[in-house]
Image (cartoon, rainbow, N blue to C red; front, top):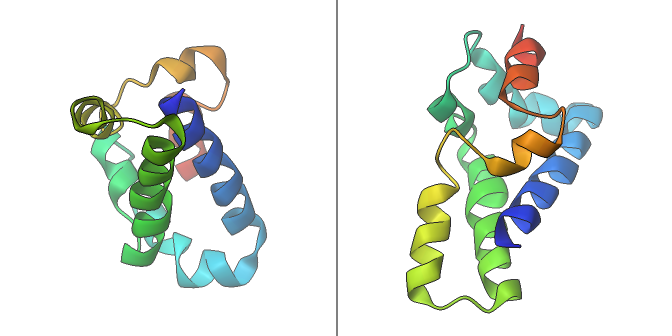
Length: 102
C-alpha cells in the first residue's frame, strides 16, 4: 500500500510539473539534463523537487499506513531500487521513462 501511495503522489505531482511551464523550467528541467536514463538517475533532480517527490512522498506513505521503523526502513530501501513491482501493472514504467527522456 505504501508503494502505491508513493507512486500515486509522484505520478500526479510529475504530471503537474510537466504541464506547468514555470515549475518545469525552475525545478524539473534539472532531471531532464540526463539524456541516457539509468535507474538511480531518477533521483537526479532539483533538491526541492527531490525533497517533495521522494522524501515527503515516502514520509506521507509511512504516516498514512502507520508503519513502524523496521517496515519503514524496508520501504525507504525498496523505493530506491530500479525494479518497482507496480511498473508491471502500468505502461508508465522504466521503458517509458527512457523514451520520455529522448
